[in-house]
Amino acid sequence: MNKELHTENYKAIDWVENKIIILDQTLLPNDEVYLTIDHWEEMIGAIKFLKVRGAPTLGVAGAYTIALAALEFMNMPYVNFADNLKNAAEKITNSRPTAVNLSWAIKRCMNSIDKTSNPKDIFMNLLIQAKMIQTENLTANIAIGKYGASLLSNQSRILTHCNAGALATAGFGTALGIIRSAWQQGKLTEVYSTETRPLFQGSRLTAWELQKSGIPVTTIIDNMAGVLMANKIISGVIVGADRIASNGDVANKIGTYTLAILAKEHSIPFYVAAPSSTIDFEISSGNEIIIEERDSAEVDWQINGRLSGSLLKTNINNQDTSILNYAFDVTPHQYINAIITEKGIMYPKYSESLERLAK
Image (tube, rainbow, N blue to C red; front, side, top):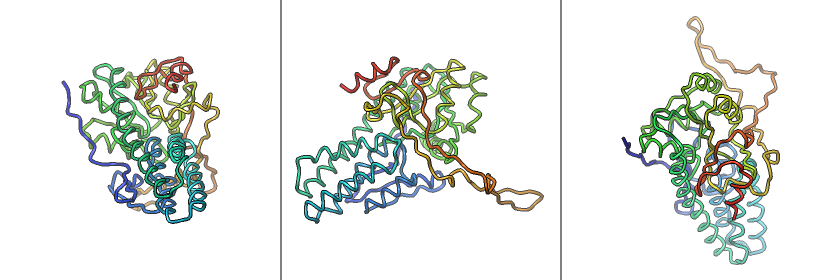
């Protein structure tokens, strides 16, 4: 039986009256707060501190940020305008090094103004590009959802990691776009969302999205996935991607590689969903992907609790313990059953199937 598809009544990012509006994802699920950003360097801070996040959303964010920078510089003489805009483009690109959509969007935007020397025209061209990137991504996500749902059988129970939904895209989602489409088609019975330490994008964001859409979701701790697979509770794994090498190696949220190995061991299909803009045709393998290392403070949470009636507050790490905090890992292509894009489903050999998308 088909189920009604719920349309998201929230946006991760938008452009309104020459300002960027973002939903602050660091405050979810408790508070749904929209921030108005009118300075491009402030937007870089929002990107770095994950107030806006997710590879496709970062592409949109980068495009709007360079447009906002052009708006701020617009009254400068052209030489100063061009120098400042180039500097802003570099800073935006470097704010999150792993997600290729960010650098892809900046390159696309800057290439669109090569033959323009009027600051006002440049601003307008950049804004047009940003809006096009946002619209194209939403269209791509809906197509990804349709293609991906065709791979799922009835009564599917899907495991997903991190958040690759409307919050991480221009809307609908990549991995969650497939889940939404499968739910609409009556193919889905349950979604299992890993909590996704250390920042809990799965338990905070994915569960929040699916609950708002009326799709059944159960949060599990990250190291429970193997048990569910062994007990034949999971029928498929679907994740998003932050960068895909031309051979099909995939960089995604830390822990994805572990899930891929577990899925392979238990003969469970492992799918990656991403728009074609996430494919980096300039690198031959995942060994060339820069993996972002983030602040150790993200790992050093505090726990509040009770012992014999007394309130306790303690850090989860010993004070002098060093902490390593890689934000992403790379899943080799041999663990991936299919890469689902808006242009169709790509199967191994990825060096050949993905290459066709570049033409």
